[in-house]
Amino acid sequence: MTPRISRKTRVTGTALAAAALLAAGITVGTAGASPAPKQPTPLGGSPLVLSASHRAELLRDADATKAHTAAALGLGSQEKLHVKDVIKDVDGTTHTRYERTYDGLPVLGGDMVVHTAKSGAIKSTTKATQKRIAVASTTAKIAPSAAQQSAQGVAAKTLGAKSPAAKSARKVVWAASGTPTLAYETVVTSVAKDGTPSRLHVITDANTGKKLFQYDEIHTGKGESEYSGSVELGSKKDGNKFTLTDDGRGGHKTLDLGNSESGDGKPFSDDDDNWGTGKADDPQTAAVDAHYGAAETWDYYKNVHGRSGIKGDGKGATSRVHYGKSYVNAFWDDSCFCMTYGDGQDDKKPLTALDVAAHEMSHGVTAATANLEYSGESGGLNEGTSDIFGTSVEFYAKNAKDPGDYLIGEKIDINGDGKPLRYMDKPSKDGQSKDFWDSSTGGLDPHYSSGVANHFFYLLSEGSGAKEINGVKYDSPTADGSKVTGIGRDKAEKIWFKALTAYMTSNTDYKGAREATVKAATDLYGKDSAEVKGVESAWAGVAVK
Image (cartoon, rainbow, N blue to C red; front, side, top):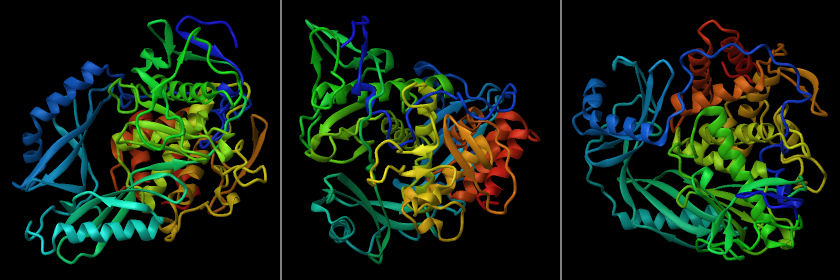
């Protein structure tokens, strides 16, 4: 253990170790990467860094004028807007994200972003659906109990769920696909075969009983800890002891579940503010890794994108370690706003890793912004977003023990053959992911349909063809054999973040993602810029046109 560093403690060994997981190697800057073109100064489309109070003021303003906005958009008298998020650009443009209700019922897939000029005039609107929101009647033909029972059956069949328990079905308008339909949404809580908690949302037609859609609220990933040297942690003195509470990052806490699968967990405490031994048999070591991963993720979003915390409200999340027994997984749960880690096979390899934290916590960013449905092409974009930002965080952290790369989970050896989980330069190398888009992409598991997004991001960042970056060799193909010139990862990250937060909605597909990133690049770098052309070229490289 190393000397105390006041409220930022340096910890050695495995502590930092877990840092090489689900999102791509671990961390180190761009050393060794192919040189990017000179960075132009972004235009007025860059987001402002909003304080918590300024963001709250913008949200209040939007809420006060939402009825006027609904009228200006020509929404029906039964429709109402509900403010979810707001982003303001340097040039004064405001992007306000709304959800909708119809006759008091939530409209699933009715979300939209209204883009307003500094003058207050509406410039444009990005909608999850272009369909008119209306149903013939809000009186259902089947009882909510029937939808509830059906949803429990879906959970048992699709998850092999243990003791599924369905909450009362709520009536909604389903507008995410096809013609808006009166439906029930039932949330079934259970535990999947591998021990992962599940909150399966099942959408059922309220007139016919037909299942319309399903998705799981819990997003998972896999990995194991690796040695990564010493790290600094934000801690707090509580009486005569210290806890892993980081007031410098919104009060983020790391708690000990003690191998339980329920509860909030208990605070870790330490007498001298020196945490962990660098070995997995010390319970503090996993906590160090998790706390460090959360700190790097917070710093990345704040310093690179001006976002204060996962929700942009300055509030820290919670990390929970030592979940279950021999649990080989980790997951983000938006309902508790927390990241949870298992200890791996035989409780010997905690899944507390930097890129796991960055990947999984980025699911929280997606939930707070575009809220991409975890199914179909939007599911692939959701998972790809977490891979993209997980990779970005590890490059940002510049951990010399494990340079940043475009390999996903290369340190965890999950398959026992030393190979990564996923490859961003050529996703099909994992045997299941897509290099290029085609009509079957949306039918894949999101971890594999994400290959199209991952490949796009690699091409946009680094370009096509053979090259070596930080000691790793890549050779990225294109769908039509064309050559793609990268614009640099720093700009690619900013474009994807802008697209996610300002132009994507809950059911954005790959064609919509292309439109969103072109708009984002235009906002940031100009209509005829090399960056816009780079975005278009990279999407053509993965067959999205």
